[in-house]
Length: 311
Image (cartoon, rainbow, N blue to C red; front, side, top):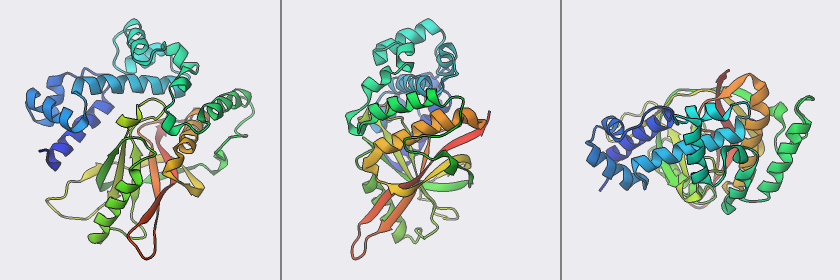
């Protein structure tokens, strides 16, 4: 039986892994962060996460490299290998080929499109390829002719430091997330934590181009600043500067392919010319509309955001 304390400690370990993929991440090191012995840490981690610590670290390194190859065009493959914790280019190339069935170069050139999960495939391959062509055509004449985004509407915003509670969904980003939000909503409503100004945001922890849908993680956060309850497991949110795009009409979670395209355009078009670099997982601002006469609540994505800092 795993407790909320177990979950919080494993979350701390996973966050450390995400932020230190270039470093040595031995079982002993990770166990020390969890405060458990290596034996107990490995057992608890696999029970909660579904993978051994070693397999989890390997997968995140592979997925980060795959992500950087797609979106960070200016980074040489050798530099990506080092950023992701590989000691040599040859070792990285061999590992990448074994994991993704393509070389890093082929992947960067578009082979990742062949791997795109069906759960999110709504003409995404075609539109992504068109976006790549569009990017090549627009290199010297500024931003225009985008499939989804009007980049003139992009905003830079500061989000506040706060404390949150969270619930997590594991699985395809087209399934389950509204149900988790609804559980969060009713939990918060019963404790008078939900108001018209409540800060609620989602964090997709994986790139759906890369991570298998069944392993994708999505966090639903509700800010609870000022709440004093020793039994409440809370998490710090560091806030910071974000590039934000707000949709004219909120986007349904079922339409994840559109959200993926929007993220792709922020990564591929806006960031390279913005003077900023990308820092962390995306953030999705929530639209919610309780339905009259019942307990159901409509949840959609009203805006997407990327954490940034000056290059």
